[in-house]
Image 1 (cartoon, rainbow, N blue to C red):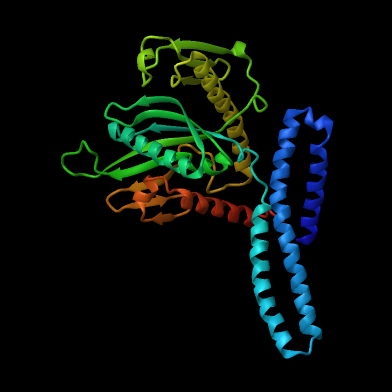
Image 2: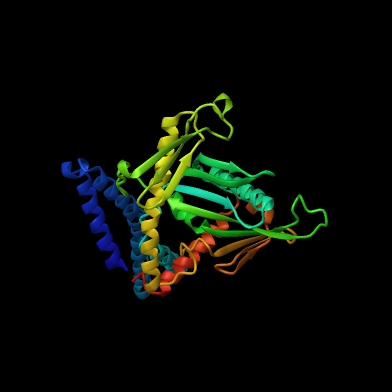
Length: 357
């Protein structure tokens, strides 16, 4: 492992030198890619320095045990060696995980889309609950959220809601949430007290910028309409809402959250770009799936990934067979433990397949 870490440190120094090159600094796409690589490598190099120091101390203590005759000194070296060996094993495990090739999309911001599915009004109410859950999760993470578009449900909640999430490694965390979320509970409209099952779908897209996908604006149809959501006097009076249609692919995006038509256009264009970009990613995922089947982040939006059972206060994560009994906390945004478990499962799976040397 030390040889591999030494090679990484060498690459880290090369990237550091490249970042100060005038040619690289004049190429923003190249500079951004190298800067991201440098940041990722720095984390590994820092951990590698700690590991190297531990290995050096292990050798020193072994040398003491082999040559020292003072029993008290030998006992101290033995105790310290046992602690160092535990520390070594823990560091090796951490470094192995860090050496798993990262999805380059993980560092991106994300577009989060939630839609009520089967279940009528109850599905819309559940979509609203999921929306609140993710807003609280993002708030706890220190991420910024921007509402892009919303279609309220007739009895509350949302038929559809779309937000931008901005922060560090947003997509790498939220991507595990894509799929069908199912709820089992007694709806507010149910008079007989019967438990109903309904669902909402969640789609998480990596935010694409102009470097990721080029859109010819001649291929985009722009339609204007009156906003239907909250917004004061401008609602239903000015054509500030924007709908964009990418004619070659049929992909549509719209925004009516802002009073300004220009701001709505910019947000809608961002979502359109991300949806087109994600179409390309889905093709790549389909090709990758033929070589490697992962149980966690397949990108299959139709897969039922999680069930929220209110009568039993239970959340079941179907992809990894995880069941937890803290439904209230989860609905209040405490989903980090579930995401961590999914990441751990995927890392273990990739390591088992030999993705990491």
